[in-house]
Image (cartoon, rainbow, N blue to C red; front, top):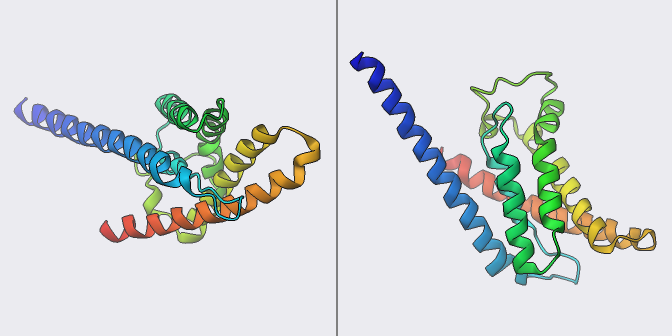
Amino acid sequence: LTNSRSRISKKNRQMNRENISTALLFIGLILLQVIVLNNINFLGYINPLYYIWFVFLYPVRKDDASILVLSFLLGLIIDMFADSGGINAAATLLIAFIRIPVLQSVLGKRELDYATMNIFKLPFSKLLAYVVILTTIHHFAVFGMEYFKWSKFGTILLNTVLTSIFTIILTLISFTFVMRKR
């Protein structure tokens, strides 16, 4: 009985640490995006949307609705500071919704082992594919909703490509630093 309580207590501490680190990541990415990155507008096209890193790092769990709620809130908070009318919330919710199927596609698996799934243990090529696909979809959705005209399709593509490249580079640099720590 004591051994059982010890395991439960240890699991609760681990869950609490995970929840605290998720909350700190959530708040930290909002602050970084709003204070620093929203003020970058390189060449009129490049404004990194780095806050989507939250979706990449959120633990992969089967049937976990919390990622959808948190992603929507994340995008909505970014929208409030950027005065962008909900486009970040919609785009972030989209990639949160499709991240498991994209991960399954990238890994070539029908089912993921949710208990052992760790984004940091992926081979670099699969991690890169995962980040590129979700970032490009997110940015295309953001710019598509921002311009919302077929006549602006070239601008949408240009903004998507340039901003995606910059965001992907920042994300991969961040992954490199985090992987070194582990």
